[in-house]
Amino acid sequence: MKYDVVVIGGGSAGYVAGSVLARNGKKVLVVEKDRFGGVCVRSGCAPSIFLYDASFFLTRFTELGNYKGISIDVKAKDPFKKRNEVVDYLSTAGEKLVEDAGADVIKGEARISGNSSLLIDGKEVEFDRVVIATGSSPSLPCIKGVEQGITEDEAVNLSFTPTDMVVIGGGFAGVEIAQFYARLGSTVSLITRGRILKCLSEDARNAILTSLEWDGVKVIENCEPREQDGKVVKATCGELKGEVTVYATGRKPNFPVGLNLLDVNYNSRGIVTDQSMRTSNPKVWAAGDVVDKERKVAHSAMMEGFISSLNILGRELRIDRLPVPHVIYTDPQVAVVGDVNLATSFRRFPINASTRAIIYGLTEGYTKLGIDRENRVVYGEVVSNNAEEIVNLLVLAIKLRMKVEELALLPLVHPSVSEVISNAARAFLNLDVDVYREKR
Image (tube, rainbow, N blue to C red; front, side):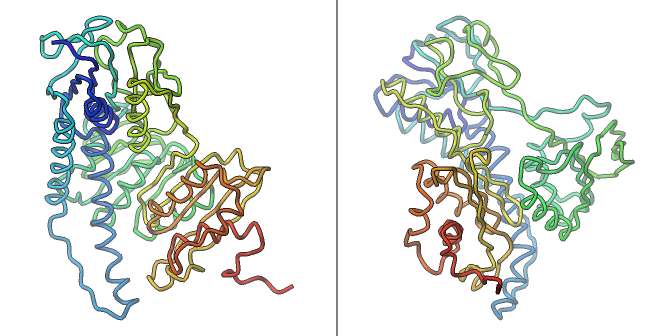
């Protein structure tokens, strides 16, 4: 078999690249060794956010009902069954979309066999170009008994709520898992060798620490696991017991077998590409978590799928990583976009000054903006319910290199929570009239 382009991987980057290329007349094969959807659908975004939503409804709806003068009694039934149904639907939809675009799909593991060929279950496939979109997998610590625990991927796919749980790792996945299982009924201990969410500002960190404490999560920073013995984790801070121990200790790129035969540059962080998603081999492109980059998130992978496929079709596009946001699905959510190091001045606006947030009843958090010396918006930080949606305004502002005055004078709907973005911008110009000023 001979193809114009073979895409290895059916995740966020792979299904996009395969679909775009096939829609534009290329003979395309997409190879997926497991199920379509990649980390996002199978063990990241979809199952994790589903359980976040379920736990939010379970713990917040009665409170919101009381705020509105409505009696709401919420009980858990079987969120795990419904989660599985959503994951199955999204995985199947991804595969059907690729086939609908005109690409061939083969289930199996692709092994590179030469500069222009690969093997799938022993059958040779030749290609003119290849897009490697093989994603990432959990990276476990080298400690005795680690096999007695489960990975972050397995944690979001559990079919029950453990009585107690030890979560090891204070990054995005560890904190999310700790909170939603605590809300579902587990007694949770979260340990991390440094500080939790160390990449965030102190304001954002403290907001999440307060929320975790409220939900009963025992957070122990500066603590490292040394050994797991059955249900007991022996760590530098003592012994912790959990029916389930979750290792949310980072991820590593999934390199296809035989990658060295393609003569591309790669390291422990991933395959090296330029901003066009080209590798050092002109026949080879890479996209998604397998790439050596900082922000390994699904929306970045999808954009790289678009960029790589369009460039294969003859365009000359380059990825812009500055406006790629990060979202942490905690309560409140945290969203960050841009580069804080480019900012020379900051202003913030509290969510409890938002008319819509006051009406709705969820007023925790704030929005913070950073601008550079030319008054362009270069950084944004949102701690709020629905930060995932609010931050998209800042993605546009940073992508378009908007001046802060332009953002401040946007006629956003009033009342809406997204107004916190323009209100934060107005704070730079002494126009934040919705915030009480201290009397002088």
